[in-house]
Structures are given as C-alpha cells and as structure tokens.
Amino acid sequence: MTAASKVIDVTDDTFQQAVLDESKKRPVVVDFWAPWCGPCRVLGPMIEKVADELGDQVLVAKLNTDENPKVAMKYGIQSIPAVKAFKDGAVSSEFIGALPEPQVRDFFTKLTPSKSENAAAEGTRLASQGDPEGAKKQFELALADEPRNVEALVGMATLLVEEGEVEKAQPFIDTASPDRRAKALGHRIFLTSFAQKHAADDVEGEAKANERDPRARYRWGVMLAADGQYEDALNELLDSVRIDKTFADGAARKAILAVFDILGLDAPLTKEYQRTLSQVLF
Figure: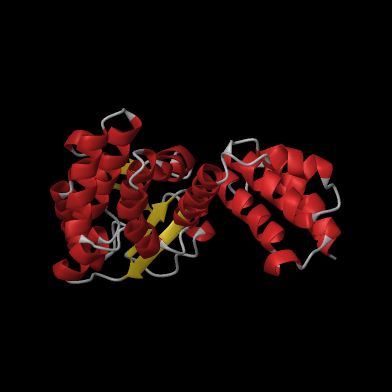
C-alpha cells in the first residue's frame, strides 16, 4: 500500500467494501495481475505513477488473480494484465494488456472531473450555502472552459430566476435543454408570468362558477401550480382534461406534464398522477 492510500491491495473478501462501495464516492481502478505476469510488472508501476499524479481523485486497487479467483471469475478475467474502472458500483471502462503510458494517462483522465466540472460543482456548493455571487463566478469559469456544461448552465439559470432576472436566465435554459431541470425552470417562469398577469382576475371564482368550462378549470389549475399547491393544481387540470382533452391544443395536459417536470419523475405525487392522467386520456 502506498502513501495516502492511492494504491491498495484487495482480496475476494475485501473487494465489496474497498472497491464497489468506495466507487460510489470516487472512481476505483482495479489492476488484475499475477506475480508470474511479465506485462503486469510493466503496467503496474505505470498505473501507480499516473494515480499518484491525480492525488486522491482516483483509487487504484491491485488484485492478485492467483490468490483471489472469485472476483477474477466474476468479472470474466481471462487474460492479464486487465484493468477495470468502477463507478457507482459497476464497471465503467476497461482495457487489457500493457498500454503505453499516454494511453494509460488518457484512461485515467477520462475518469476524473474536468476543470469545468470542478468549477460547476463548486458553484453548486456555494449556491447551496447562500453565496450566489460566489456561485456565479464559478459557473462563469465552468462555462468559459466548457460552454455547454449543463450543471453550470442550470446553476446559473436557477440563480437568475430566483433573482427575477428571467430574460437573462432564458439563454442558459435554452442551451441546457433538453435537461429536465432546465425544462422545469422554463415551466416555473411560465407559471410565475401567468400568475403575475392574472393576479387581478378572480380566477378561482370563475372556476367555481363554471365547473364544466375547461378554460376556467385550466386557468385556476395553473394559478394553483404557480402558488406551489401542486396536488390541488393537478386535480383542477385533470378535471379540465376530463371535460375537453383538446382544449387549447391540450393545454391542461401540457400543464400537468410541466408540473411533473417541476416535481421530478420520481416524486410520489408524480407517479400517482401519471397513472390517473393515463386513465383519463386512454
């Protein structure tokens, strides 16, 4: 084992914790080798050198296939040296044989965050800690290096929307599309604009007085969504769909899908109402 634990030895017994669990925190590169393997003695030091240059961003784990046949068999190791990179508990990339150092370095580089990704991550961290100006600077750095970095685009757009700078946010949203978070921001802008435009209207009263009017039910559903009352909004919008599926080119159905985007597809409310919407439509 080297200093700073950049390279460790693993066994059949320790593989789960040392490699699979650890790969959920950072990439882990496993060097499958054996003492009798000549190319392994060439590749091993090269891997360790590159790993040392990357600091603690990547962990290298060496597994002796002679002494640990279970893991070797599980991952189909038939020829060594074999190198597999693990991310989130699964193999993300791999190669076989003693590659030249430039190719080994390229293999590792693709596993680690880029300058742009690091800046975007720092921007997200600063935004979550209530430092929007610091976050913007990091997002700007990320976008200067990678203009289509989705994390930075969404992060910048989110901050601008929260500050009411909708026009400034729109180009970032457009560039980040079709990322679902960008779509959700676009929906939030529409809802806020609708609520502001109709603030003086008795939208609720119209809906209650005209229960069979798909337009009135749609408008009240959108107002409820703008206020964050998503379940009540979905109920109103569903009633609009029930009354007339084709109203305004399916406006109520589209509004329901917009709410799903805002909530997230894994949200319990989304899952529940997806089923209901499907029943109403079909």
